[in-house]
Image (cartoon, rainbow, N blue to C red):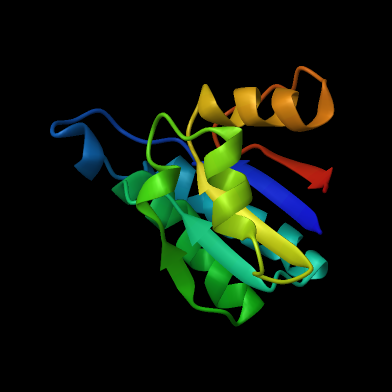
Length: 127
């Protein structure tokens, strides 16, 4: 299985935190990432329930032609075990949109490598 781990794109400030939306640059970055990931042909696109993650994941799901699936286990604080459970049985290539520092910690746990996740950053992991 190929896991494509994505940190949500740039979000603006605001309260409550769960409702922070992407900035115009963040929206553009999400569209560009969607175009790039289309070549990967994801079977599923899963997102944290926070708005900024959903707004990052939506264009990826749209370009892939799959429904966007929201999973509470991908909210801030998600662990490698959460991700393993979320992606199980979802197909050959799965995109997961989550948060930092979670993405970095999950990538480290799965690969043994420190991975930098800027806003809108992604990393492919073969499981």
